[in-house]
Amino acid sequence: MDTVSTNASFGGTQGVYSHASETCACDMTFAVYTPPQAADGPVPVLWYLSGLTCTHANAMEKAGAQRAAAEHGVAVVFPDTSPRGEGVADDDAYDLGQGAGFYVDATEAPWAPHFSMNSYVRDELPALLRAEFGGTLDLDRCGITGHSMGGHGALTLALVNPDRYRSVSAFAPICNPHASDWGRKQLSAYLGADEGAWGQTDASTLVRERGWHGEILVDQGEADDFLDLLRTQSLIDACAARGQDATITMRPGYDHSYHFVSTFIPDHVAFHAAWLGRG
Amino acid sequence: MDTVSTNASFGGTQGVYSHASETCACDMTFAVYTPPQAADGPVPVLWYLSGLTCTHANAMEKAGAQRAAAEHGVAVVFPDTSPRGEGVADDDAYDLGQGAGFYVDATEAPWAPHFSMNSYVRDELPALLRAEFGGTLDLDRCGITGHSMGGHGALTLALVNPDRYRSVSAFAPICNPHASDWGRKQLSAYLGADEGAWGQTDASTLVRERGWHGEILVDQGEADDFLDLLRTQSLIDACAARGQDATITMRPGYDHSYHFVSTFIPDHVAFHAAWLGRG
Image (tube, rainbow over all chains, first blue to last red; front, top):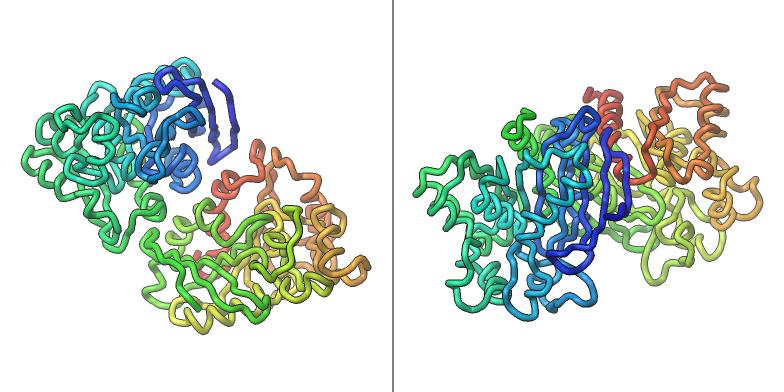
């Protein structure tokens, strides 16, 4: 692992690192915010998965998570949203290929050799962090959140792997990708045209079938231009059908931008901190 | 004035606007954050002047000012750092020309026709805001802050125009441009090689000669790569010589980035809010 940069931030450290990923078969970059409380021992970890077109940097720079994380003593990890590089497949569309990994493990050409963001976020990156940051990060206490495509990633990773995450929330998540053009297009490309091969990649279906052991926190802007693609109502309906504990709040006037995310991230960090023993 | 964009943010509105500037003889873009308290009547205004290479957008997106501004009921205005456009003079260096207006009114070719950022920030933009946002912004209650080159701008604008600003602070300001390569180069270009023509453009000199009616708040990172150019000690010495009320704090570990600015902006917004009657 190489250190790309470190910056003091709210009494802690905002670092950016790169490493040769086996899972994605390319160099991957990620960011870790370590709060000042880590000086006294390992702190719990909040995973923040970003949306379409983003790298590790967008939320790190614009979401304002560090202030809240330092208040609560929680670390925040910002992975990239896809493999990248010259040898990695890509597409001209903003919503397929590099910057649009959708947090699945691709099985189809030309994506399969590199696009394994599910395994990368779930397994490889936590193992790397455990090895490299074992003294400051407690990888046994993880929460997960994300924005848009990253909200889809957070919900599906948590619902499928409840042993890995103690808490889950999302900002404007893609809630029902199996019924949306933000989902069907990408899952067809990465996992094949046969919908039967898409597996556990739809948060609304997962809530109906499996549920979640705790509360699910979701914020969604009512002025979001992408409401039709996000299909928030499908998640609301699934929670109602399941009897799932969930707080899904429609926020009048808010759109899909980081202005929306930054407004509500203090609430989300506090929510995760409480579930992670930093309440 | 044209509205470029508006986004809901912390219960208020982050807007971006453009207008044909007479002072700069080109179209200029700026941002205004209006906090939720503006719904109950005009709120005081904090001017945030940005540093080299920045537009209105960098601090708007990365400084995290909105959360603090919404807590205190203060608006924040983010002007651009120079005139821009095809017909506007420029230089290949990052620290001269577009993105590097230095908040002075240029008298020399090729800069004089457009580079009048001092008059623009002091006169034209406040007048425009008074006309366009009279119901929400109280332009008679202004504070001013800034980062790096913008810290120089904030200090010099306040010290020269104490009738216009009730409070002043700065993040890692250029404190003594008449003795720095961040200053001598640009003032020579914009105002002429004769140092006698540079006028009241050096904050350390202004503190010694004029002082400020209130407290001056400055934060400076000790790990800032540009300490030699910023010359913080000159400002400290000037405040000591004048007996100027000032809190100039060296922050161990902090650099010149927005990670530094965002860490301390809650303190600065609270400082200005107190001076502006929103304490």
